[in-house]
Image (cartoon, rainbow, N blue to C red):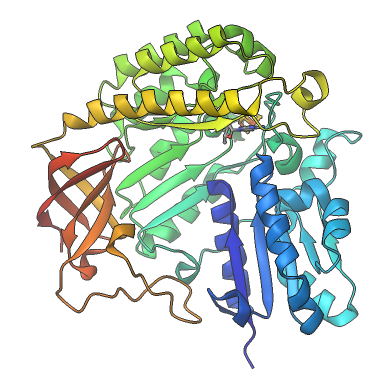
Amino acid sequence: MTKRFFLETVGCQMNVLDSELVAAALLRAGYRRTFERRHADVILFNTCSVRQHAEDKIYSALGRLKHIKEQRPDKLIGVLGCMAQKDREAILRRAPHVDLIVGPGQIGHLVALIEERERTSEPQIAVALPRRGHRRDTVAQSFALYDPDRLTAARAQRHRAMVRIMLGCDKFCTYCIVPSVRGPEQSRPAAEITAEVRALADQGCREITLLGQTVNSYRTAENGRQVRLSDLLERVAEAEGIRRIRFVTNYPRDMTPDLLQAVRDLPKVCPYLHVPAQSGSNAVLKRMKRGYTVEQYREMLAAVRETLPAAAVTSDFIVGFCGETEEDFEATLRLTEDARFKNSFIFKYSPRPGTKAHELFPDDVPEAVKRRRNHELLGLQNRISEEDNRRFIGETVEVLIDGPSKAAGRTTFAEGDAEPSAVSAANGEKLQLTGRTPCDRIVVFHGEAKWIGRFARVQVERVTAVTLFGTAVSVES
Ligand code: 5AD
Ligand code: SF4
């Protein structure tokens, strides 16, 4: 009997990519994928530790599996990713029925760990070294680079893929758990990255997103010469078949002129820049240890607007960080008003044990105030997004078609399928599709299922803060 795995992913794009690699390894080892938890022989959660809420969700999912494990002890339950690295003891204490605990630096060993668990009946724990108390190089080695050959069947979309260019983070913003759970910053060799991009292009991939926690801090040496992200973009852009290149997430201080010029001069590189500001107040930025003032952030933005007038810039903000006053929050509103971000991801501060902020500052902004600030900032951002989207009405935009829109209803996940394949529209029948513009704006329009993965031109008729609605005027064959 073929064994089946269920894999649920929470968190950032790095986790989505890790899950794709885990799925690929399991498919290669002969497993089939199921999207129904109850059909699975191996149930895996790829987890996130950035906010408490993400962890709570996993603990309750694990709690619900307790009685299943009692009835079917042969079913294996695994916790992968950041929570595994951060909390292995706590997981075993709160959910002793867990069989596998595998940190982000060890996911390459998952298949072997499953086999070992089956052979020995012992829980298998594989995590990297903690950052405190060991040499940086030793810790870095324990977060192994794992970038095997890519498998289209393991991806949700054939035409889009992420490519890791860096691991880890060394910035140590005081609120952030990422440097502890993802380890020291390490850049992958440029030649490996370009080879992977070429292989993806051969598999039919048209859009590539280069990933790193601070992607624009990318730096490697090659024959004694430094390779920066701008150099890497130039090389990746040579891959035939690749039509669009993005990169996320950027660190404001490393947004250097050479990078902006590369985005301007390389037509394949999308004018889309995610550069989180986190706050508009200098006092808060200082406590966050972000390494820049709001004036410096504004200068960086001015340089972006100068070199790339049409670029979409997006941000992240944390509201209710320790000690954030009403004046601090108003400074964030002012920055948002002036910056005209395409959109912002807004989070309420969540204290993370193991971070400097948790150690040094009380979490003193009441939950109700965090919620109100979140709501207010989101309201302002939505007003700006909608105003800016209105200029697209009547214009024609180029989209890469991703699939049926959520509103289009059923995308059926066939049992054992690696990707949501069957679309519930009969051949030729029109269904609601979504695509993305080079600036990463979401466009909804009617079309045929066979258009998925192709480029189209869509005339925009109506907009909201997050979506452009229109009619397809042409589709590439
Ligand atoms: N609480 C709330 N938001 C956080 N982020 C990172 N750490 C925390 C935290 N402790 C946010 C930041 C980051 C995004 C990925 O998550 O805005 O850019
Ligand atoms: Fe976390 Fe700061 Fe590193 Fe981003 S740059 S991953 S917010 S420590």
